[in-house]
Image (cartoon, rainbow, N blue to C red; front, side, top):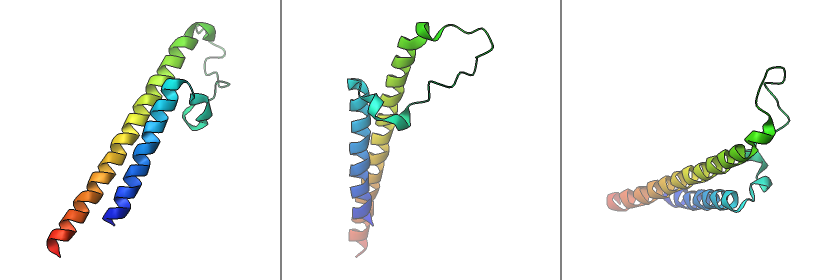
Length: 95
């Protein structure tokens, strides 16, 4: 069980690094599961600033969010790896 947790932790850490690197390099368009649809317009009938003026800020927010998501995923993978290591060590001490 501990070895399984360590392997899953490594895979999750690699995925977190990939998400952060791809978002910084601007390859976020390949990761459609992190993007929201731009066709949805909740303020269609109300006055709202034109989307052209907000696009750079929206892009920066998307990149920052993706980097934070990648970092969070990396931390989760590191936690799984540590949990697996602790499990193996406790099992060694008992047996």
